[in-house]
Length: 44
Image (cartoon, rainbow, N blue to C red; front, side, top):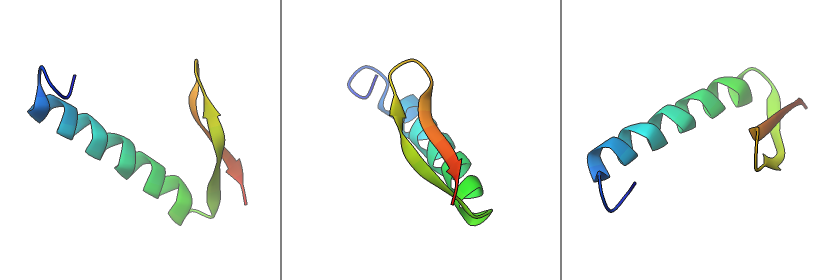
């Protein structure tokens, strides 16, 4: 996606970062990554 549509890829990366920060700022942490489910958010 980065090579074919760099602008769309940048938007998607920003969306993911913003979503992760929402969880981290709420006291959760990233517990890992699953190929099917994506980032695993757990209580800190």
